[in-house]
Amino acid sequence: MKYFIIVFSIFISASLFAQEIYTQKDVDVCKNTFEFAVEKNLSGKPINEIIIEIGKTFLGLDYIVHPIESDGEEKVIVNLSGFDCYTFLETVLALSRNVKSGKTSFEDYLTEIENIRYRKGKNLGYTSRLHYFSDWIYESDRKKIIEDVTKKIGGEQYKNTVHFMSSNPGSYEQLKRNPKFIEEMKLVEDVISNREYFYIPQNKIAVLEKGIQSGDIIGITTDIKGLDIAHTGIAIRMEDGRIHFMHSPMEGKKVQITEKPLSDYIKGNKRQTGIIVARPQ
Image (cartoon, rainbow, N blue to C red; front, top):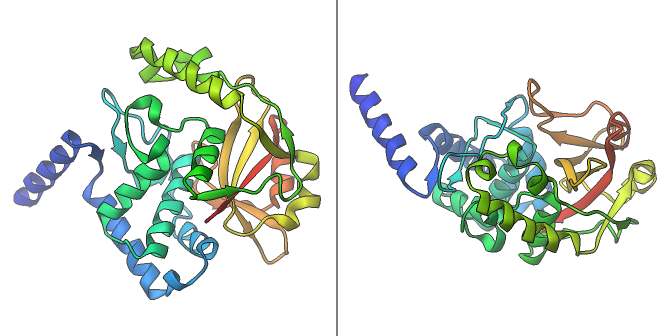
């Protein structure tokens, strides 16, 4: 037992000094997920079906607050024991893309996570991370990871100016410690604010949900000043024929599929104004 503890400690320490942070448990979960994909012959299925099947394997895991934040230099952090809404989404998408491409080593997963999480697919520091989800959608569309189909299925123009991070630096440990990041984020925010985006307003989701597919990525827009998208998850069509929402909802909750259809779920939160829909490629 002592030998195991020493070896495991060395493993953790080594990963902390690298560009990634993860544990042996994360490696095991990743391996088990890929083995599950083989058992279910998922690689031959469309990417949206793979996303649904892999997403379901994480149902019941805990919501974790700030799971990819670290002190000091930005690192690619992996935590497969629990998620916030964004890390649940990116984890399922990355694993699904690994399965579809046949690149199923843990190293392949790390590469895909970095590609999804950062502008231009590379960790070049804190402000290269795609903090705003509308920015993530734009960059992921450019990388052909997803296609923003919101306008195509009936969305209307989403006019929004983002500045939440630079206006609230006290809410972000890295911005508090590194004032230069605030100025860098302002530049990023200006670029995002000058793009054209579309969304489906809350009161039109039920009518337009026929254009949403299981496995589509959903960004829920908000009226919080300076913020674009406050919550994310995955669309899933259930036996009632309606689109529901697979997500990691909030602290104290677990990864789940909403009992109510997505349109009704969003109506339950006055600050949620609509959705942006992205289709995995």
